Amino acid sequence: MKPRPTFPAKLDTTLARNRPSTVGASASTVTKTTAPALPVGTTVRTRSVAAAVSLGHGMESSAVRARMVQKLAGQGITDPQVLGAMGAVERHRFVDSALINQAYEDTSLPIGLGQTISKPGVVSRMLELMRNGQSGKLGRVLEIGTGCGYQAAVLSLLATEVYSIERLRGLHDRARENLRHLRLANLHLLFGDGMEGYAKGAPYAAIVAAAGGEAVPQAWIDQLAVGGRLVAPVVTAGVSGGAQALLVLDKTPQGVRQTVLEAVHFVPLKSGVA
Ligand code: SAH
Image 1 (tube, rainbow, N blue to C red):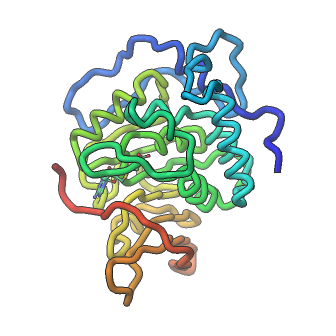
Image 2 (cartoon, rainbow, N blue to C red):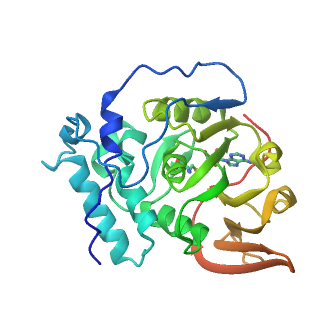
């Protein structure tokens, strides 16, 4: 499948402005960015410093990203909104400079403190499952495991409000730094134990976890709206060695319906903060 003519959405041009941020470095639990996000598909015709970033392949980052999007489509991702958002967010801005050349490969990469940024293939698969073929944006979405903030940025293009929780202070701070220049007004970064969810933002149209636990915490199910969907890696029951699979949980008026999909490899879901 070929990307639609509007691809890649030019979110990258906003990244290039690199305006000083008004987000403070306070230890408050909620960090809110300040300016409106560009909708997917918005084209801003300003000179893009980001586009001039060489990734070591003699290619503009937008071209490398467009190739990544084509590969994702080739792997079976069909949701145009997901593909558009994946094409819009500059993944190379979220990884260590030593890893920039690998930023658009379908691989997970270390982001510090023993954690990893998920593969683009897995991010897009989870977000496509989360959207479940809906037209338009989702409402409020909760992400467990902000990590470097990459998936949170992609999510912010697919939902009206995104709450993203991280339990490691060092990564919460790093994500805030990584996301500062994007100034995504609808993205709220939280420091805390995501196993408790975030009741203040509930009910959520969707919940996405980037870390895998033994079971889905009851708080997540409670905070999911009826009609909402949760996508999370879970340790597969009965399988030794902690093998994980992707779980899709739909909260319907009749109750909870769970579907276990393919095997995945995520960092473990841990309780408490550090
Ligand atoms: N979406 C992230 C992926 C980060 S890896 C990205 O794009 O980079 C998963 C993250 O989940 C790790 O940073 C880990 O610290 C975090 N995590 C694990 N258990 C958690 C919990 N109970 N609450 C919040 N975050 C948690």
